Length: 133
Image (tube, rainbow, N blue to C red; front, side, top):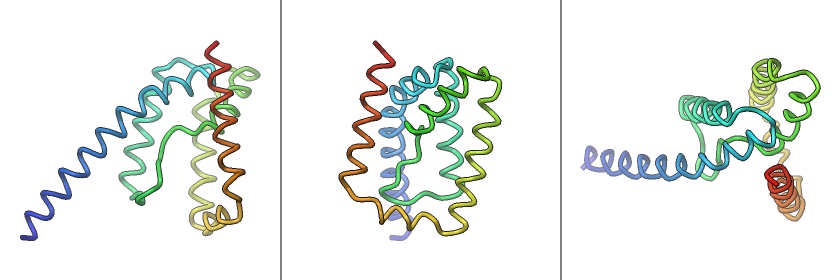
Protein backbone atom coordinates (compact mmCIF):
# COMPACT_ATOMS: atom_id res chain seq x y z
CA UNK A 1 0.00 0.00 0.00
CA UNK A 2 3.03 2.26 0.25
CA UNK A 3 3.17 2.69 -3.53
CA UNK A 4 -0.56 3.43 -3.60
CA UNK A 5 -0.10 6.08 -0.90
CA UNK A 6 2.79 7.65 -2.83
CA UNK A 7 0.69 7.66 -6.00
CA UNK A 8 -2.21 9.36 -4.17
CA UNK A 9 0.18 11.92 -2.67
CA UNK A 10 1.64 12.61 -6.12
CA UNK A 11 -1.82 13.11 -7.62
CA UNK A 12 -2.88 15.42 -4.77
CA UNK A 13 0.36 17.43 -5.03
CA UNK A 14 -0.02 17.70 -8.81
CA UNK A 15 -3.59 19.00 -8.53
CA UNK A 16 -2.53 21.47 -5.84
CA UNK A 17 0.40 22.63 -7.98
CA UNK A 18 -1.87 23.13 -10.99
CA UNK A 19 -4.38 25.12 -8.95
CA UNK A 20 -1.67 27.34 -7.46
CA UNK A 21 -0.03 27.90 -10.85
CA UNK A 22 -3.34 28.97 -12.39
CA UNK A 23 -3.91 31.39 -9.51
CA UNK A 24 -0.38 32.78 -9.84
CA UNK A 25 -0.75 33.95 -13.46
CA UNK A 26 -2.97 36.98 -12.76
CA UNK A 27 -1.03 37.77 -9.58
CA UNK A 28 2.32 37.72 -11.41
CA UNK A 29 0.96 39.96 -14.18
CA UNK A 30 -0.54 42.40 -11.65
CA UNK A 31 2.72 42.61 -9.69
CA UNK A 32 4.57 43.23 -12.99
CA UNK A 33 2.37 46.24 -13.64
CA UNK A 34 3.01 47.51 -10.11
CA UNK A 35 6.77 47.07 -10.57
CA UNK A 36 6.63 48.71 -13.99
CA UNK A 37 8.15 45.80 -15.90
CA UNK A 38 7.02 43.59 -18.77
CA UNK A 39 4.43 41.01 -17.61
CA UNK A 40 6.63 38.22 -19.02
CA UNK A 41 9.27 39.17 -16.46
CA UNK A 42 6.71 38.64 -13.69
CA UNK A 43 5.61 35.30 -15.12
CA UNK A 44 9.14 33.95 -15.49
CA UNK A 45 10.06 35.21 -12.04
CA UNK A 46 7.10 33.32 -10.61
CA UNK A 47 8.07 30.13 -12.47
CA UNK A 48 11.66 30.37 -11.21
CA UNK A 49 10.49 31.07 -7.67
CA UNK A 50 8.14 28.09 -7.75
CA UNK A 51 10.87 25.72 -8.90
CA UNK A 52 13.28 27.11 -6.31
CA UNK A 53 10.74 26.72 -3.50
CA UNK A 54 9.97 23.16 -4.63
CA UNK A 55 13.66 22.28 -4.84
CA UNK A 56 14.54 23.50 -1.36
CA UNK A 57 11.26 22.33 0.12
CA UNK A 58 8.27 24.35 1.14
CA UNK A 59 5.88 23.90 3.99
CA UNK A 60 2.15 23.45 4.10
CA UNK A 61 0.40 26.77 4.53
CA UNK A 62 3.26 28.82 3.10
CA UNK A 63 2.72 30.32 -0.32
CA UNK A 64 5.91 31.04 -2.24
CA UNK A 65 4.92 33.60 -4.80
CA UNK A 66 5.54 37.05 -6.09
CA UNK A 67 5.56 39.45 -3.20
CA UNK A 68 3.46 42.59 -3.20
CA UNK A 69 5.90 44.31 -0.88
CA UNK A 70 8.77 43.51 -3.22
CA UNK A 71 6.89 44.75 -6.27
CA UNK A 72 6.25 48.11 -4.60
CA UNK A 73 9.95 48.49 -3.76
CA UNK A 74 11.01 47.28 -7.19
CA UNK A 75 8.70 49.81 -8.85
CA UNK A 76 10.67 52.69 -7.36
CA UNK A 77 13.97 50.94 -8.16
CA UNK A 78 13.00 50.47 -11.81
CA UNK A 79 11.69 54.03 -12.04
CA UNK A 80 14.89 55.58 -10.68
CA UNK A 81 17.58 53.24 -12.08
CA UNK A 82 15.90 51.36 -14.92
CA UNK A 83 14.90 47.70 -15.22
CA UNK A 84 18.52 46.56 -15.70
CA UNK A 85 18.91 46.54 -11.89
CA UNK A 86 15.99 44.15 -11.45
CA UNK A 87 18.06 40.96 -11.61
CA UNK A 88 20.62 42.25 -9.11
CA UNK A 89 17.81 43.31 -6.77
CA UNK A 90 16.28 39.84 -6.98
CA UNK A 91 19.62 38.18 -6.16
CA UNK A 92 20.22 40.45 -3.15
CA UNK A 93 16.66 39.87 -1.90
CA UNK A 94 17.13 36.12 -2.26
CA UNK A 95 20.41 36.19 -0.35
CA UNK A 96 18.78 38.20 2.44
CA UNK A 97 15.90 35.74 2.65
CA UNK A 98 18.20 32.72 2.75
CA UNK A 99 20.32 34.40 5.43
CA UNK A 100 17.22 35.19 7.48
CA UNK A 101 16.06 31.59 7.15
CA UNK A 102 19.42 30.19 8.23
CA UNK A 103 19.44 32.53 11.23
CA UNK A 104 15.93 31.43 12.22
CA UNK A 105 14.42 34.91 11.84
CA UNK A 106 11.15 33.45 10.52
CA UNK A 107 9.98 33.03 14.10
CA UNK A 108 9.75 36.81 14.43
CA UNK A 109 6.53 36.82 12.36
CA UNK A 110 4.75 35.58 15.48
CA UNK A 111 5.29 39.03 16.98
CA UNK A 112 3.27 40.73 14.23
CA UNK A 113 -0.41 41.05 15.23
CA UNK A 114 -3.02 39.59 12.88
CA UNK A 115 -4.73 42.98 12.23
CA UNK A 116 -1.40 44.36 11.00
CA UNK A 117 -1.08 41.50 8.50
CA UNK A 118 -4.65 42.06 7.29
CA UNK A 119 -3.97 45.78 6.90
CA UNK A 120 -0.79 45.06 4.95
CA UNK A 121 -2.59 42.76 2.51
CA UNK A 122 -5.42 45.28 2.08
CA UNK A 123 -2.86 48.02 1.42
CA UNK A 124 -1.31 45.88 -1.30
CA UNK A 125 -4.74 45.40 -2.87
CA UNK A 126 -5.18 49.18 -3.00
CA UNK A 127 -1.73 49.67 -4.57
CA UNK A 128 -2.39 46.99 -7.20
CA UNK A 129 -5.80 48.41 -8.03
CA UNK A 130 -4.40 51.93 -8.31
CA UNK A 131 -1.58 50.78 -10.60
CA UNK A 132 -4.06 49.25 -13.04
CA UNK A 133 -6.30 52.30 -13.33
